[in-house]
Image (cartoon, rainbow, N blue to C red; front, side, top):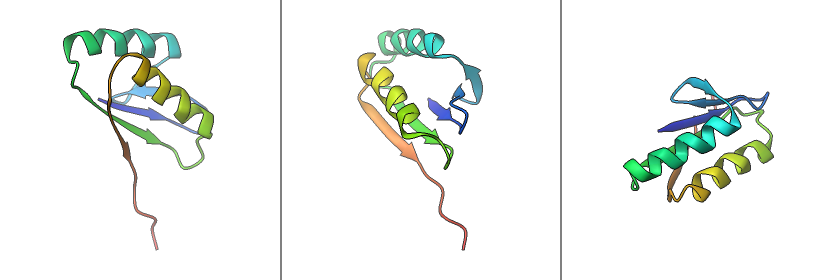
Length: 76
């Protein structure tokens, strides 16, 4: 599962838009069906830190513990 957040705070579940309430519900459902699912979090480089923390908290509250971050190398 890839969760993304852009600079405006919009959240995406595998590239599909989702709101905070839907995020919480889907994470809880997913944790029941796939308790060892890996969650990958991607943030736009202009994403506010608090948006990333909100997503991490939602993932952890759902009981999912395998969290990774997707980064892209800086172009030179």
